[in-house]
Each structure stands twice: as structure tokens, then as C-alpha cells.
Picture 1 (cartoon, one colour):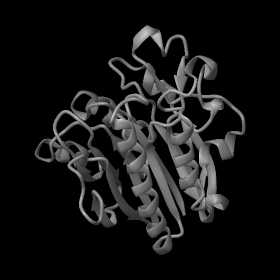
Picture 2: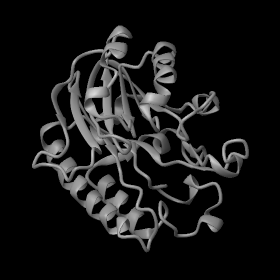
Picture 3: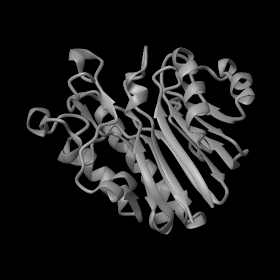
Length: 257
């Protein structure tokens, strides 16, 4: 088995499609999971991606949210949204590729600790934990990938003192992420790189990328069954330096037996 699986919050696939096609050509991943596609399903660029050699599993809505999985082989057991029905927000899809279950998520941002979107985020993460627990029973080899909108700990924040315990770094969000890891998942990037500090998101404002003031919130969580085959995990910050970039960089994992 040899696979390259990537995750990228593209912050509008309509705007970023040329970059995505170029990245697919350059990096040739077996699977690219997208978040924040911001496209209604009828406007998804199926033909353009098929011409590039990729099947598309997608779940979108106009203007907000949206997730997709672009793969060289068609997914098995592909599913968009929650098994028991969604809440109108396109934030989750899943498929099985060469025996590996991949769950792609765009976790709610939460906005602020005072916002009603913050408890929604915590409830969403609790629901996700139950889903992943169920998926692991069927597929021990599992990757949970996406934009988590949580910096796992202070090593993942450019200035943890300035950021404090605000949204994305609050104790309750981090505890929810720790509960996911408690199912038998590992933060693959941290597993490979120890205490190294790199970011996957930089604010458009205040020259965040140029000043390298970012957070690592785009994660690839791997089940312990996959640990022996993880060869590398990369944050491709070059994509963030492109013209009209997303505010996120792609992250990818390389697996090889």
C-alpha cells in the first residue's frame, strides 16, 4: 500500500479551482479532501476534476461551508452528511479508499466564547465523536481529516499568550479534540514532527502570512492501526504564498507499507 491523502480548506472552490487543479497536477495525491467549497452541488466542477483524473464526492451549499473528496479511485461506502440526517450545514463526508476509511470534516468556527455558535461547535464535536467511534468499529484503519478550527495546544499557536483562551484555543474545544484522540487516534503531524512549530492557517489581515503569525488548525488524525505505515506528514505552505490564496495551506500524509 502506498497512498498520499491531503486536506485543504480552499475558502471557495469557485475562486480557487485553478490552484486546486495545479496542486493536483504537481502533488498527484490519491485523495484530496476539501473544506469550505462554498458551492451548491449543481455548480460543483465535476467535469474539470474528471478531466484531471479525479472522482468527486461532494456535499455543498451556496456561500458557506461545503466539503468534498477528490480521489483517483471511486470511494466505497461514500456518504455525505450525518447518517441520521444533518442540520442543513454541509460539513461532513466520508468514504473508504483501498480499505482506509477517511472522514472529512469542516468543524464549526464558534465565532467567540460569547456567541451561540460556540455551544453549537461543542455539540457538533460531541456528535462527531460518537460518529467516529462507530466508524472505527467497522474500519480500524481510519483517518479523520479537515479544518478542525482548534489549535490542539500552545505549540500550535504563534503567540499563545496573546491568543489566550479565546475561541480556537479554549479549554473546552481542546478537551473535545482530546476526546476524539481518546478514541484511539493520533495527531499524525505532531507524531512525526515532535515539538516543531508550523502553521496551516494565517489570517488575511495584518500581513499574517508574511509575518508568519498563524495557527495549526488543519489536522490529519490517524487511527493507531495506521501508525506503522505513516511515512511523512507535510504542511505545504507554498500554496499559501500563491496569488489569491486560501488562508489555509494544504496538509498531506504519506502512507506506505
